[in-house]
Image (cartoon, rainbow over all chains, first blue to last red; front, side):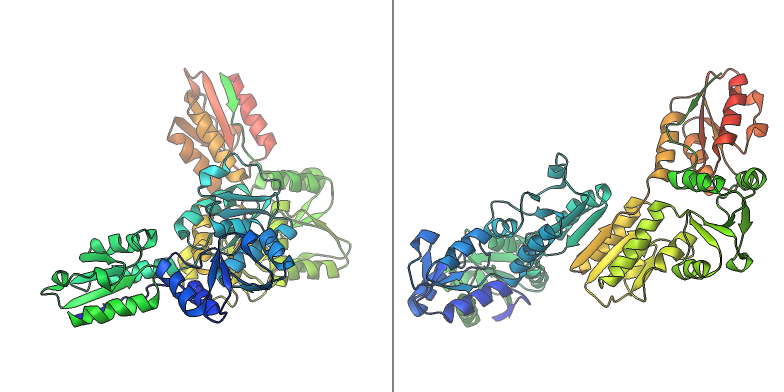
Length: 274
Length: 274
């Protein structure tokens, strides 16, 4: 059977970069899981002795500590740097950008609106670069009761949000305030994987989506593909059932944003045997 | 018959202010007509000897020259100031604002997009405060072929444009560029008159709209009211026909943006006699 990979799949730029950084720092520890994939965390521990700390308290003298792609709140970074440790910052550059924008806009006297989930680690980090004039919302309607102290608003978005929803929020502000400085900090990676999977699923006889069964972005890829063709969700090559591919000539493959490349390669190799 | 004025009608803030300025400067001349209403221009000439120059060439030494609400291009202002004249700037503050924004944003290295009609005197003036990086459009589709030299865009709007159309343009830019600095320079005056006329026309037996028969904003007021009640368009009290008001108990009154208050008062006085 012929196998065709989607034109975009798996890790985004920031995660690929963070894993390369981890591989370059044997015996280091990441603060929080580097990626939502246990196989990859195990591989980093087994092959590179990269360990995992859940909290700052676990950090010991002389440690090398890797900050993950989401970034961390400003105070945590300061506390970490105050310790006798080497800090390796693997914060995704697409996350560093909104952090720095919030810092600069706060300094310049803007009220800042962040479009995102205030409980998400990325947003917690971004928020921490502002002051009391930072507001975090998920919907324009949440802005209705807020009276901003200034007529100058700056906006940033959590990198994984939808642009259409961001526009609803900024449009609400543009109508009401004299100046709205809109920074488009949304990263296209998630949507590129979805668009590529959608396109490929229309061309093939069957689709295989690789990713954790608890991964919401993997499930979303599966649902997109299932609209167009018979689709299967697998965690690795061991989940593949030869019966699925009887009389199939072309199999498409996509993978969730936390699926490592080596798992994808194993799946593709086995599919080609069918 | 009872007469009720709309809650907003006639001159906007900027025009009222410009006329007061003209009245305070006897023997001055305006550069271009101060208002699109011949009665008012005649009144200023007859009562205050305020004259009208169509071009800069007509300006003579020792003249006092009044710049009208729309403003003038930067170079014209410079040329005027170089002459031996006293310059009185009656540019509406709501027009000075976008002029200054275009100047500042150009200095700060932004590409500037103006939403407006590039042939309109106000827009010509606003554009003149920028450089080659200023673009003027009326629709988002006009932006498709433009490649901006920078990833930072600032936007302003002609004061009389519709907010919904401005949002279409800024939304197009927000999706494509990293930073879009949106200045809401639209003035609500035109829409306040329309909203007030619409509301009043639903309450009354008959509406009278006062304004020049060539004035597009007066005609628009007439059409809005005619949807709700019998409506008449008059230039002054001489156009009123008593037959229109037979058996009518409550007459609503609105006026176009270039209709002077003294004409409105004359019409209202005559209506009350019916």
